[in-house]
Image (cartoon, rainbow, N blue to C red; front, side, top):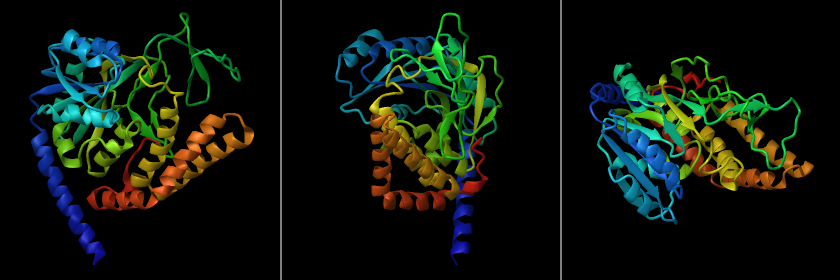
Length: 365
């Protein structure tokens, strides 16, 4: 009986998807959403760039509960943008959702406030989506790291005051005038331990990327409204980090796809708004990686994600190499375990809504 009911639910899901695809074939208006929190200078720079793009029919700036003079600055500096003022900071997902709700555009472009789009960025995303197959829900841009970067010698230890980025192979990269331009992202993939990673992270800027990709970057992408109406908006309970990966899972499991547009380019000042060493980043990144795996990934991935999180925390605590990070990671694990029943219920809900089995989703691992 359960099998029959499950097939009936999947059949109804496919019918809803086909109706959504039919609605999604007609793309007319394009809006750009930029979320600000206490960084009006960065936001003004980004917004002015998209206001100059003729493909942007509307630019929505969401102030996410800033406690500085951001609202006054934004009103004065970018009066042609639609300003949405929230009374508290609900995280990136809540801010982006407020911007999406403030426009009825058929295509919604999400742009990080610490990113500077190249001329034609909005048009490249819109045109790619308009020309794509109707089941393409999102198009993710080509994100280039701001500045130039040089790899440190293998095994080298960075100075305490030295800014570094870690490549997927463990090598450290540091800003250098003599360095090279490097990529930040050509989309998102999810590996075997549930880690959502930027595809082509720190690869040469000339790297050619496949058009097909698992997920989009919430900092430089276009979303089809018909797809959002089918699966819902960003999950605000995540607050920050992994909200784009989580939405990509929902899209994939409902039969939608994501593609990469190489000609939609932005330059990104990586983590200029939050910082990759902040307590917020470490704790939320660890928690949300495991939460999203619990909701969407096959059980082997969930198990590996849990073991990796626990091992990282225990290893740091025992070796005293980084007690602060160990405390934050173990705290994130405790939070997930405390609310495990809720996460398992969410997993069951996602299973009921899906038309594509978890193990059939190509995450790019």
